[in-house]
Amino acid sequence: MADMRSQERLQKRPRSPENVKVRVLIKFFSPGGGGRRKKRRARVRRPAPLQIRSYKLLKKLGQGSFGNVMLASFIKSNQLVAIKIMKKRPEIMEEHHALRIAEGSPFLCHAYAAFQSEMKAFFVLEYASGGNLEALMENGRFSSSAVMFYAAEIVCGLQYLHSKGIVHRDIKPANILLDGHGHIKICDFGFAVHNMFGERTTRGLVGTYGYMAPEVMLMEEYNAAVDWWSLGVILYRMATGRSPFYNGRVRTMVKESTISEKPKYPEWLSGRLRNLLKKLLKKNPLHRLGTNGNIRKHPFFASVDWVELERQRLKPPIQPQVPSSENLGASSEELSLSLENGYSNINILQEFSFLNPTWQEYAVG
Ligand code: ADE
Image (tube, rainbow, N blue to C red; front, top):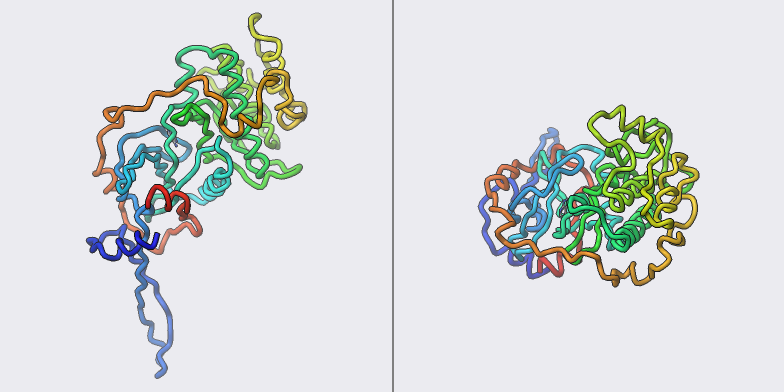
């Protein structure tokens, strides 16, 4: 850390907006009176990981809530990261808060750093190189043991979030990533709401149609049970290859089907899995497993060693292929530069920037 700072001081950098010079206006009155206003400049250098020009942007990974996610490499160490680039908006602090909390669970996508320029806000995230469940589902339905593995890891991630008062509100296959070993990482906390302890509820049509619980669509008050509903839809899709409800383009039909239809369960589905799905897809959130009852004790999970699973010691059903360097895409310096659109002391999101000390120490050096 000390080394890095002294190195930075030695390197003479060209002036650029990212080499931040924050001008601080200090009002003071001269001893002779007269109330003259003087300008004083304070030079604030941001460490390399907190400047977009320290990253080579490689390709677009996807579009999350409120922004694009890019694959990038941190130039100093060549480490691959995912950078979420967003417009600034006050609600971003909910996502920021959730990401800080996420550090406590291996089943949640972690952030290494957050920083901002005048117009944009950036999250530097761990890169989950194994793709996501949406992509895996394109290969057809999953074996029962694969459903059990992914379901159990998602249960751990969700229970951790909920224990910290956070409801995700956008649990869907595209937000369930796989790391390089095949373990799950729940990502995109852009719709998360916090402080949801005890009996607290919230409102708002938030999430993705097809995975949204009936009470959300009905604009009722709701709680963490909405995430368990979404898990039910995901498990149904993994197990059967289809959605439990109509999930086409017509939103009113998605809503109607979600609110009033009963899913059909194929004959060949095991009794335990069918029972689990029925309990997660309860229309009444008060009766829904997850918030009502201990999901870990459900017979579908009878063979899961939860202690080993929480330590990520169980073998994932699929070992993702390491992406080859050709698939990483060409670097886009132009894009990187276009994002360097200044940093000033206007339009600053207070308490937004952070640098994960562990990353600073090990990856950045
Ligand atoms: N898509 C969105 N976030 C991602 C991440 N952290 N890693 C890989 N792909 C992503």
